[in-house]
Image (cartoon, rainbow, N blue to C red):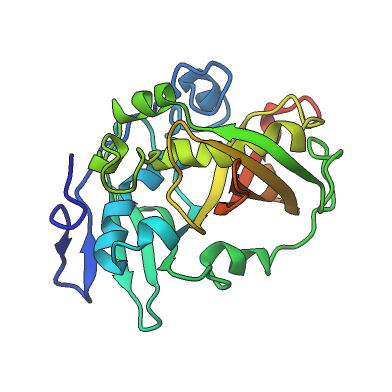
Length: 290
C-alpha cells in the first residue's frame, strides 16, 4: 500500500507533481457487448476494449492529497474530461499543478504523451468553476436525439438505495493502481473507505430509474466529477442517491447525456458526495442510427 505523499515527487518543471507510471487493468473486459469488450470496441472503431474512466480516477487521490492536503479525502473534488481512451495495461501517468487560486490543474498522459484526461481539483467548498461546470455552460442543445429521445433535461429520481459492498471493493483492490491503507483499515476514518471506482458506482445507482427508457446502445464515460461534501464514502454503508438530468447534447458520432447525482447517508440524511457524469452513447452501436 502506497504512502499518499512519499509516492509522488516534485518535477522540475513549473511545480508539477507527478504520480508513478501505472498500467491500469481493464477490469470489465469480460463484459461482452460493452465498450470494454475487445470485439465490441473494435467493431465500433476503437483499438480494443477501453479502461473505464472511473478506474483512471484511482491514480489521483494520493497525488491530490500531496498537492492540496489531507482534507481532500473529506471535502475534495476531482473534475475530469476524458480525451484519449486507453486499453488494458497501457502505461499512464497522472499530474497535478497547484494554481494561484489554490485549485489544481490535473491531467493524465499516455506513453505517447497524449492526454488521457484533463481537468481541475480543489479542496474545501464545492467549486462552482470546476472543469465540468465550465463545460456545461458552453453546451449547445441537441437537435436530433434518437437513443435519448425519451429523456428530458430536468428528469429526476430520489431516494434510490446505494451501497458499496465489500465484495465489490475486494475485486477493485485486487487490481487497483494506488492501494491506500484506508481501503483496508478503518483506523483513519472509522470505517473502510470505498475505492474511487466503487464510490462512483454508488452514485451511479440513479441510472437505472433515471434512464429506464434508454436501451439498445453501447456507451462510454466522457467526463466525471466527484465532489466530497462530507466524505469519504464508506464500504458496507447504506446511502440514498438522488439524480437529475443536467443537459443533452450531441456530436457527429455520439448522443450525450449529463446528469448530477447526490449521495446522502441513509440514516441521518447527511450529504456525503455529489457527482457529475457525462456519458457518450455511440450512434454506430444503435439500430436507431444504423
